[in-house]
Image (cartoon, rainbow, N blue to C red; front, side):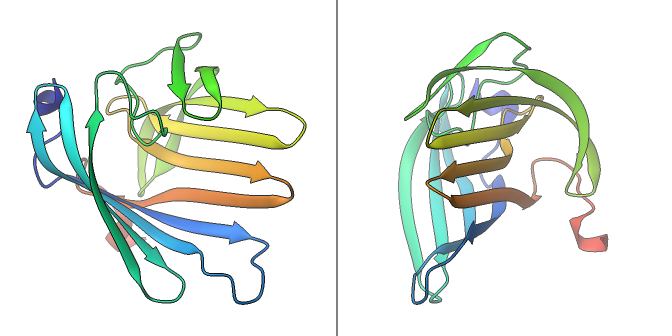
Length: 162
């Protein structure tokens, strides 16, 4: 259940970079997800998006943490290579790799998936234990969006000392 993986007040913060940025274009620079309620497998998550013009957009919605968020921010915990996860807009992606990488200053066991066609590519890396997205790289028509975890309170990090 959600209560086994997450607790109310858990949060994840991502840095967002988009290249190239067109002159005058307003883009997201930071995304923060906060778990504001948990009931069985459904987490109510507040998403705050900080924009390059200094404004914030906030939304609240449910995520089924057992089946995944369909957006790739959260997948089921402990997924293994060859298992599939549905990502809206890309279909069922196969977990293709498992490795240990450093995120927020600590070693985390990760799983990842890739998608490529003529105009799109997607690469997502998740924390295996919690299922939260650590990094996402999307390229569409020569524009690349990179989201990478900056900090979280879900595990002990070293972000403040890096």
